[in-house]
Image 1 (cartoon, helix red, strand yellow):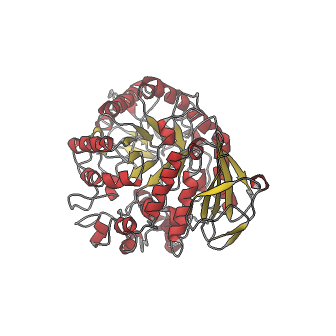
Image 2 (tube, rainbow, N blue to C red; image 1 turned 90 degrees about the vertical axis):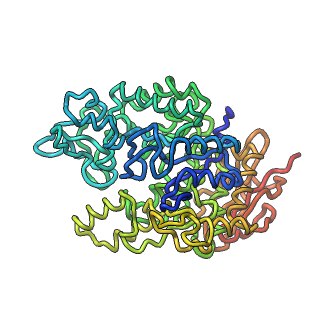
Image 3 (cartoon, one colour; image 1 turned 180 degrees about the vertical axis):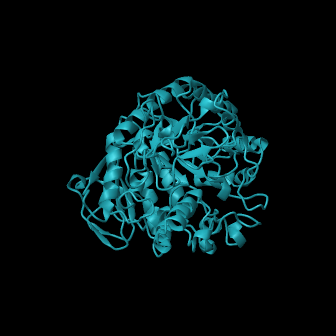
Length: 556
């Protein structure tokens, strides 16, 4: 196993809009982040992943970029950014930027030029097509509801947008576009940034001819733009021209990426990316691929996904490990118990994350156990995905609003975007103004101030987990062996690395659960390493609700 700093790192994701507001306009900003750097350092993480902070009209909260070399007005200035970068480096941490280059904003100068005429030099920077039979060029649908094509009156053609109509897709077939992207990457890396999380990175390559997709539920056409024919060629070129020239970290966000493709993207010898985000675990609680239908995924299914990726990637590629991010619901509400056993279940879930092979990612607020928000009506939501869906399915389609709202409450991206809960003062200490989105009313009980003062808090346990990971190579590099995979309540596995062995037992239920020592563990001399309850020896016993117990083999 080849060692690397990014394999041993723990990453903390900041969603700037919701992290800390320094000027009272209700929107988080860079100076707010600067003010809280010591807090992030205290947690013990190594890398901050900053969601997009570039200039943007904010149709999709910064994922629609109008200038890749400037900072969003609401977030501050380039001087603020450079001060932030310096502050991160002074504290011994690194900064991961969010690279959004499948599409730009329709207000980006390239697109402004592109739509002027079919002869414009920038026309081929985007994907323009004539209509077919008086309709769109094909039947592809957008991630955010409706057709993936927008008619442009000015130049008499349609342009492709896999996301909102204000996010036109770049044409990666055009070598000039790719060189523009590489120049943007060099700009930030030469400034001192330490790598990129790449947004929707497996969508860059579209099948030539853009054929009609297979009709059915969910998005139509994905088979022609996910993991497309030239995607690996593009990443090898990017690696050759940019990535390999810097000591950086790269992770590609990739929806519907099969294991065999992930092994190519993140393979040890593939010369593409360090790792990918795959979403197989997130798809488990949908129903028949329906985005807004929700079910609690049975534990054996969840374990099967994690164990498959642990085993298949070992020695061949590197995993990324996460429970949530800015696009997913809160972990404790989704996978644990956000009521009676909120602390115990969140600690258990992150014990699992920190004892698997891969680079762990912690989203802001997870370290204090923030929960999904009690959104009362559609008016409480701000996310363009949710609002577009409501417009198409309820306003236009006549669907039952309460039924759809129930699913939205479980799965909406806004669950992770409510403001960071710093203390129990007004607006959770996030802003002195009116927050851009509602503050979760449970901030009186769940906040950073309370967590720092409570020695038994999730925050302090997360610190212990990070320290444990840094001091035990088996937690980072060890191989993975699972026991009792069909157990409906317990996840049981071991990690082995150069003679060091860790044993992990996790109770995913809210009841006492019988644990039977695996045969292979009998006779081993062990001692408790970490747990979220008073620790007991490794033996046949009852695991308490949401208990996590990690043991280490005694040195001989």
